[in-house]
Image 1 (cartoon, rainbow, N blue to C red):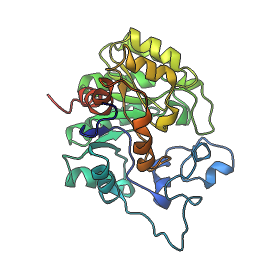
Image 2 (cartoon, rainbow, N blue to C red):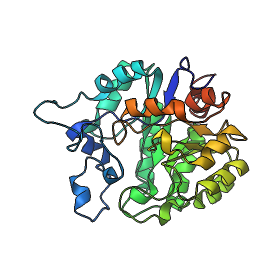
Image 3 (cartoon, helix red, strand yellow):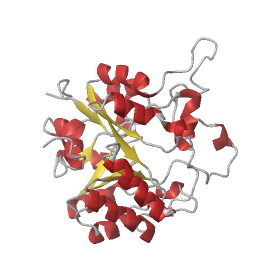
Amino acid sequence: MGFPKNVRVVETMIGTRAGQLAKLNYANLTGMKDKETQKFNFPAQYMFKDVPWSDQARNFEEEPEPPQGADLLLPYMEKHNIEISMIGIGLGEERSAARDAIDKHPDRFIGCHEPDPNDVMGSIQTIRKLFHDGYIRAISAFPAGRVPQVPINDPKMYALYATCVELDIPIFCCAGIPGPRVPYQAQHVKLIDDVMYDFPDLRFVTRHGCEPWEDLAVKLMLKWPNLHYSTSAFAPKYYPKAIIEYANTRGADKIIYAGYFPMGLHIDTIFEQLPNVPFRDHVWPRFLRENAARVLKLEP
């Protein structure tokens, strides 16, 4: 069978802002000290080629600024059979594109919010309000990207995990060496073991590869039923071999598709490469839709 064209995809990482406005997506990231990063559309841009609508990829005289929000995403979602996309819900009027998309297209967009664990009580209140207002089905975390950093197993994070369990929503958390030029210790994959031990009911999904500890991530997924891995920020041709082998054997229910458009990878490039990933036939519908739908509780 190979890559199925009839699966209605659930996209678990896609952005609503592109071009110059893309920098607003990373207003929280203030820990980078090198001057080169300040010129990027997003902090890990040095790792990617042809970032969509970046200064390097555009001819400003011929290409206008791209549309934003649902106007940006819906044409690509239709093109690639993506039924539902999870988008980041920020705070403030300058980040209203995601809320507008959810308000206007509730059947196509769901929200995910990245709270600040350094503001524990404020974050808990915000999570609960966004959830009860119908704007989020998950939260996310970038432990190495906070100032000060907040490790995966930090007590501040535990308060957010407890809130997720209370509301019955998952967390999507960056793990492994971060792309932005900040220290990595806060995201060591081994820290997830403590979290799953203390929160066995928490649905925890890793983001951004877990490298160079992807083998450890597999061992932990074998151990903990509610631990999952998403493929965000990786072009399909670079999916780690350990993850592909795990999906093809005991981990078909654990690996979740996620892209990285328009931050670093064009959605067209992702879907051009996906058919070449050597997943077994039974893995594809779970990877593209079923696992995300279950973790996010999109379907009965």
